Length: 407
Length: 172
Image (cartoon, rainbow over all chains, first blue to last red; front, side, top):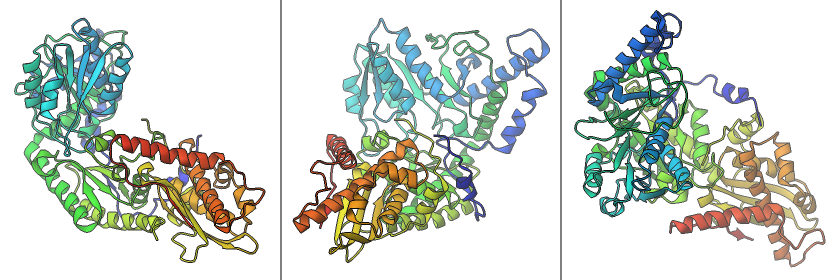
C-alpha cells in the first residue's frame, strides 16, 4: 500500500521546538560534516581511486587519509586494516559469514550473546541452514554477558565469537576485554569480532589494548553520513569475501568507493574524538538529566539497562507501563520529540525487542519502551523540552488506556 | 522481525488525536475485552443496549495499543451507535478498514481485534439474557478466532519466557 504521508507531516506544523533523539535508527548530519563532504561530489576526487588519472588519484589520496584518521582513533597501526563498506549491517554480515566460511573446516560453532543486533543474529540464523551452529550466551538483568555461561559455551568446535562492546538498545558497556580473554583462554583459535557501532566515539576503545580480529564501525551513529561503515580487520587476518565484483581499494568490498561518504565518516570521527572527554561528559550529563527527569516525574516507568558508568554516555531506554510504544512515538512526534520504540506494534510477529526480553522485561514492559540517544549537539533546553513533552504524552495515552476493563 | 513503514491516513491520525467515545462506561449493559498486554494490543468495549429493542444506544472503548488500534476502536464505536445488535454483528474487519480509509496491512489485526471485542460483547449480552437469536452463529467467526489466536500466541510466547500475567477476560 502506497499512501501519501503529507497529512502526517503537515500535522507537525507550528511546533514550538523539535528534538531528534532517534540516533539509533538514523541521524542528522552536522553542517561541518556536510561541508567537508560537498567538494567530493563534483569538485574533486570524483574519480575511481583505482584509475590512473588525476580525479582517481585524488580519490585514492582522500580515501587513504580517511582510513588513516579512523585507524588512529581506533589505535590501529595500518590504515589498510580499515575496510570501508556501505554500513554496519554489511560489516557485521561480512564479519560473521566471511569468518565462518574461512574457518569452516576447523569447526562449526559460533558463540554470540542473546542481545546482539539483528545483523548478527539473523545472519547467524542464516548460517544455521548451512551446517553452522549458533550458541547464544544469556545476559543478566542489566544486559551483561553471563561470564560463567560464556566459559561453558566456548569449546574446541568454536570458530567465531561476536560480542558488541556496547549494546545498541540498552547501552550496556560489556567488559569486552575480559570476554575476549575468556574466549581466547578456552580456545586461542577463535576469531573474535566486536560490533563497535555504539562504542566508537563514545567509550575509549583501542585495538592494542583489546586485540580483536574484527570490529564493526558505524558512520551515522557518530553523526556521519549513512551509506558508509567500516570493518576493522587485524593485519594478516584473512576473511572470505561475501560479495564479488571489481575489486578496488577495498579488497573486502568490491564496487566503486563512496568517496564523499568516506570523507564524511572520517570528519564525523574527527569531531567525535577532537574533544572526546568533553563530548562524553556533556552526553552523560544530558543522559542522566533525561533519565532522572523521566523516572522522577512519570509514574510506572522502568530504566532498561544499567545506570551510571556502565551505561553508554548517550543511551536512554525507558519502559512506560500502560502505554504502547508505537502510539507513544507518534504522540511524541506530534509534539516535536522524535524517538523510537522496542514495541512489537511495528512488527507483525508480536514479539517485542529481543534485547528487552533477554534482560527479563515482561512483554507489556517491552511494548512500552522508548529509546533515545543524546549527542554533543543536544542542549539543556532540548532536554527540558523533552521532559516537558513526555509526561503529557504519557498521560494522554494512559487516559486512553483508562481502567482497561477493571471494575 | 522486520519493520514496515506506517503511512497512516488523515482519518486515523484524527481519531488517534481525538478519539471519539473514549473511556469506561459506568452504566454499560455489557463489556468485553480482546487482546492482552502481552500482545501490546488490547481493547475494552462497553455497550449500552436498549434491551427491549436490542439496539445499541451508546458504545465506548478503552485501548492499549498503537495508533491504528485506537483509531479502529474509536471508529467502530461510532459505526455501531444506534444500530441493532444484528446490524452491529455484521460489521466485519474489512468494513472498518474501508470506513477508516485504508490501513497498512500489518495493522489489519487491529481492525480484526476491534470486531473480535465487539462480537464478544454481543455474545455475552445474549448469554446473560439466556436467549440466542437465530442470526447469531454457534461457531466463532473469523474475527473472534483471530482475537483468540492472538491472545493464545502472546500467552504461549510469554509462557515460554516464564512471565505471563494478564489475559483476555470478559465481564457482563
